[in-house]
Structures are given as C-alpha cells and as structure tokens.
Length: 230
Image 1 (tube, helix red, strand yellow):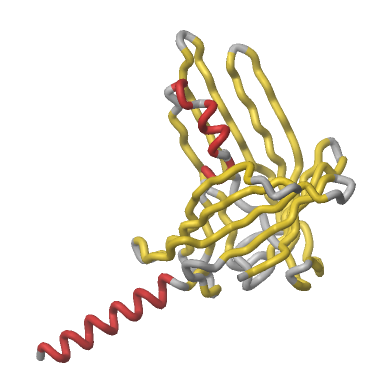
Image 2 (tube, rainbow, N blue to C red):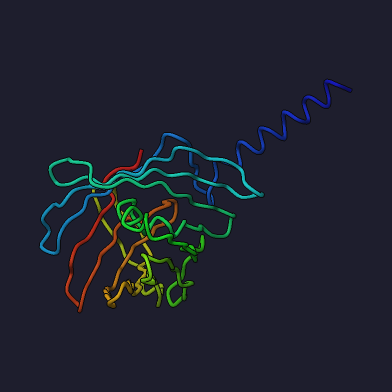
C-alpha cells in the first residue's frame, strides 16, 4: 500500500512539474530566455533587451513564469531592470502590466504614496485576423504633500490586423500583426499627455513578440526584433 501511495504521489509530482513547464503548448524552463535588438526610426541600433526566465511553477492550476528583464544601451551599458510575471492557463497568456512601468519610473513615485492597479495584457493562444483583444492599463494615485498625483497608461484599440511573414535574425515566422494605441498621462499640478501607436507581431510557438514597432503621428519612432532564443 505504501509503495502504491508513493508511486501515486510521485506521478502527481511529475505531472505538476511537466505542466509547470508548459505555456499554451510551448515548453518553458528556468534558465531559458530571449533577446531583442532595438533600433531607432532610421534603423540605427540603440541597444538590446535581454529576457531570462528565472522560475516556472504551478499556480492555481495555471503556469506562472517569472521573467527578469534588462535593457542595454548601444554601448552595452545596463540602463534598466525589471521583474514581472506571465500566467498561462492553456487558452491565453496574461502578461503582468507592471512590466510596462520601469523600476526607474517606480523610483520617481517613491515618496508619493502611490497605489497602483493593473489590467494585465492578454494574448489568446489562437489569434485570427479581425479579432479584438482586451485593453490593458496601469493606473496610479498618490500625493506629494497637498498635491494630488495621478498616473495612467492605457493600451487600447488592440486588434489583429493581418497575418504576415516576418523575418528576423532569429528566423522567419508566420506572425499575427497586432495594432494598438497607447496613451500615457500624468497629472502633477499640470497635465502631461503622451500618445503613440504600436504594432507587434506574434507567432505560434513563441511566447513573445518577434517584432514590435512604435509610431507617433504616423512616423516610425523605433522598433525591436527578436534576435535570439535560448
């Protein structure tokens, strides 16, 4: 009986471990990751982004993936670091919206008693042209002395616009083109508002964008492309 119980528990543990390494059909494990190169609107290199998976675990029947992110300048100097989570439930990927706010931005709010709420970024496992995706947002409220402060970042009008072949140094992908609008607004005595449009390309079997582009008033401001998966 004890032997059977042990084998049963061992089987459950193996099943959990196996599930914890799967995200919408894609195998993930600690130590793996990917890199993206950044360019300005004219194609000049501005640095790179390095993402590393540091932990994969089962969480309420889902797969939780912890990712460390680091941004480097064109000269190789580390400029920004962040850690965030990605949750996979078999049908979609939920990306922690806190990843949209850098640690440097968070530090600027340190003495303002800011409280943040998030609507995470959702990517369905299956994408089809014409599909509308949920909005994502980061909202913060706080105070600096008597001065009320609000911060809002909204990603909206997210649509699957087309299916395209995309070639990057990491390979050629049959990718879904997702267009969206981004609005960032800060009220701190005076109102500061910034708007831009983004295009991202996502491919089956890859958990991250294979390419992303940012535009302002129709002009390409910069882009990133997948260079390495390890």
